[in-house]
Length: 384
Image (cartoon, rainbow, N blue to C red; front, top):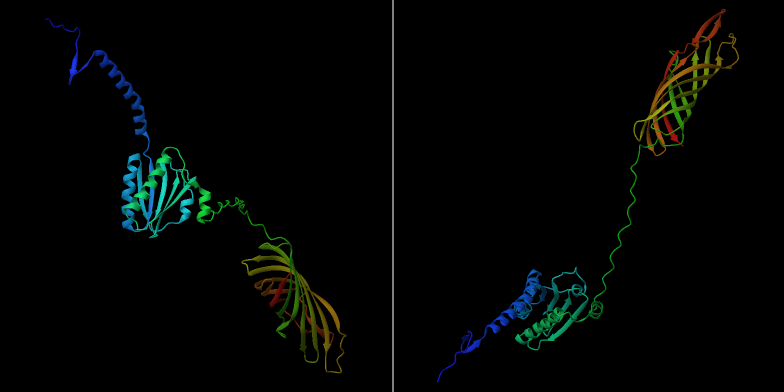
C-alpha cells in the first residue's frame, strides 16, 4: 500500500496544525487590536493622575488604620489618594466651595471623634453635591467598621468616575447640618476721589481792623522830664497777608504838666492826635512787627498861673502844635483775637515850641520842650 503525501507545507505545535492563511489572519487581528489600544494608552499617559483627597479627624491610631484601608480600596481605580489628619473639623469647610481642581475626583472627611458613630462627608469636584453617611460603631472602630467606611468611599468614587452623582445639593445639606450661610462678599469701597494737591497758599482775605488801648510815656523837657497818659488806637489793613500795608490813628490824653517859675508858672493839658501809615509783618503765628511814620498835632491848653497880684496874666487858651512821628512796635498774641504790644518812637516838633512870659517888654522862657521827644508805650490790642 502506498501512502499519499499532502501537497504544500504545514507546521505544528503540540499536534495542532496552522496553515499559512490562518497565520496571516491572526497577525492582522493582533495588529488592529494594538493599533486601537495604543492611542488610548498614549492619551492616558499624557493625562494628570486623578486625585482623591481624604482628611481623617480622630485619634492617630484610628486614622492610621483607616488610611491603610482607604489606600488599598482606591488603588484599583488608578487614582492617587492623598490622606491627611486633622485635630478638628469645622462643617463650614464641608459646605464652602474651594477653587476647582481639574484632576480632583472627590474630597472626603471621616469624623471619628464620636466613639459610637463615624461620619463621612464627601463632595464632588465642582462642590455641587455633598454626601453624608453615618456608620454606627457598636464595637468601636474595628476592622468591620473600617471596611464599611472604606467601601462607602470606594462606591462613591466609582460612581463619580463613571459620571454619576452622589449625595444631595450642597445648599440643602448646609441647611440640614445647621451651618449658617456665608456672608455675601463685601462690596469694594467706592473709588476715592484724588485730593488735588494744594497750590501756593493764597493770602487770607478780608481787611483787618484793630482796636487798642495804651499808656504812653514821652520825654518832654529839662524842666518836666516826662509827660504821659492813656490813649486809644484804631488800625486798618486792607488784607490779612503776613506782610501788609497798614494805617493807624491814635488819640492820647496827657496828664497836666505844671511848671512854676520865679513869679509866673504855667499848666499845660494836651490831647495828642496822630495818623501813621506803614506795614505789619507777621513773623510767626503769634508775633507781629509794625513800623510806620506820619504826623498830627498836640492840642494844648495853656493856663498861666501866678500868686503875685502884681503880675498880669493872659487868659487861658488852646493852641495846636504840629508834630511828625516815627514808630516801631511788636505785639504778641495771647488769645485768638487779642495781643499785648510794646512800642518805641519819637515826636518831632516842627515849630520848636517855647512857652514864654513878657518881662519889661522882653520874652522870657518859662518852658522850653525838646524838639525831638522820645516815647515808649505799652498796649493791649484787639482784632476784629
